[in-house]
Length: 90
Image 1 (cartoon, rainbow, N blue to C red):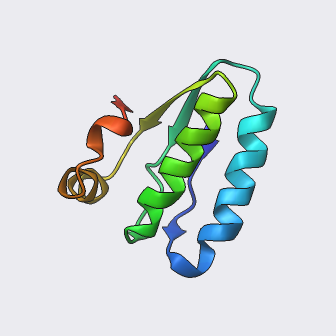
Image 2 (tube, one colour):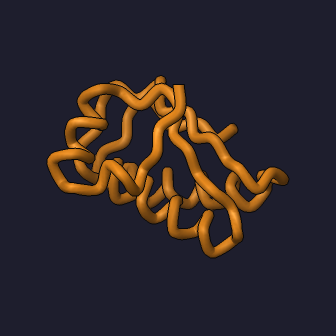
């Protein structure tokens, strides 16, 4: 399982994405879960990181599901009309 950091803002997005992409490549399963429960500080950049991670997963023949997605992040995804692109699991 991949884990998002406590903070994911514009200034940390590139490093976080690089780390997540490396972890995605190391993930043996074709179904990859991303634990977002630690996220406390984030902005819309978090959505960009998650969308790029989803794109990379699809290119690798993997599916991506978010776990523990904060309500505020879910609301942001809905506001931007991309909630269906970031499926969430319980």
